[in-house]
Length: 381
Image 1 (cartoon, rainbow, N blue to C red):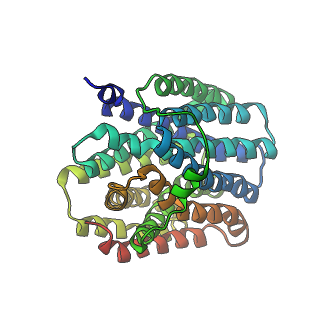
Image 2 (tube, helix red, strand yellow):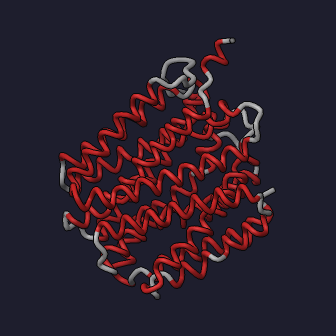
């Protein structure tokens, strides 16, 4: 066996790492906004604090991705797993808006490192197998782990409160550190940032690349903003649900999202069926803040649409970057407009909720889904 083959990580080990990462991150995504509410942080400030994540993610991720294309993935894995621990410790030890802001920044570094290499590692380990199918499978399994994390954290918050929940996440994060540092990820040299790094980032790209980037923004903005911001804040502050109920409903959303995604992959649905189910998300988003009595069935509709949208988004990404010589960098750049949109949504979202309520933000996400369905017909093969 050659050195390259020995260093190649197995798909099974990568999947375990990515699922554990998703489990911890999903649990933290439930804990953090509820913890900020518990600490009497104003909703406006919650949006501003959470907005630090995507903007730091955008800047740091493309740098990490370009470094990974040059030196490999092992050092980046060490950075994101360490940042995960730092963010949890900051939430545990510094209960102030400034402490929360630094914790969110550490989360941005964590997410940047993970997503800078997650798909690249899968491509490397996948070999000659169908990469699109593997991308969608990994995405669905991450959603499954996401749902399990949200399901578990509802129980944990009920019985162990916030301090116990943070300590439990710290324990799982230490396991993640061990797994990432002992994985056979590629490492070709020392960490450095130079002219070549920025040359990879700012190289000229065709208009088809940016069209695909816009489609990624349209499908991922609703999915991400619902999970990390709108649904937990709406259920807790507007419907006055307890931590257990919020965790349960978020878990239902993520688990249903994963189950339907896996099911649709196995049934090998055409893009027209996927687009149809994705389109159902738009009216569900409009109705969600207007009909609180139908929260559970509407969440199911959103989960079905999200599962279909994830499949389409991953295949669209594959079509655009798979044969690129700078695949990690191109993946990072393609998501840059999405992170700018998330920053604007979160930073302005708290103000919008205080002035106009939740309905306008849900409507913005419905428009995003509608545009994806109308434009996505030409971006998915």
